[in-house]
Image (tube, rainbow, N blue to C red; front, side):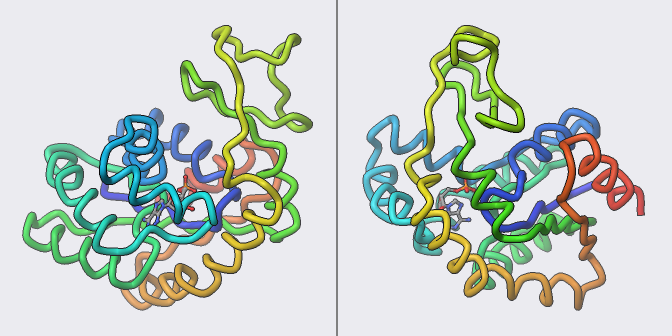
Length: 212
Ligand code: AMP
């Protein structure tokens, strides 16, 4: 199983990716996480990426493709789940080329979708744990009393979860990433899943999509 998880920012990709990776034993590769780590580490890549991320824009393809190639090659030893990659046609074509060389083509492209206003609500309420990476929502999945993570870690809001940035990211998704839906539909790989309801309901749909 080689899976791509597609969907607009804030649709719940991170949450579903964790569930899928655990249930199916896949290596979870999230380009957003790789980039945030590079930013935290203050690496040259992080410095380059930060300005784009803070504005809700995509990091240029050549940066991402360079970042991901080594990770993809490493992941090819097992089965993997890409989360947040590819996000442009150029990235999808680069991924296809790498996978073709390895003889491990994609098997499923799960596409999560939901009303954009639900996304704005979800993203602006999202909080993450600095220590363990757990994801909460101030209204729909509140952290334990005291406003800290269950592990005791401090919670924070991603700068790109601010409302204006979320709306910009939705526009970027519509313009640059949504064309991938046709690209993968044409290859017979696309599995659309409605991402409405709680995480278990959505995951039931994802499970069904991955069974086919
Ligand atoms: P995410 O955590 O997947 O929502 O990604 C957060 C931010 O990282 C995005 O808004 C982009 O600025 C950047 N990013 C993550 N993945 C990619 C990608 N595949 N291509 C370009 N930019 C990306």
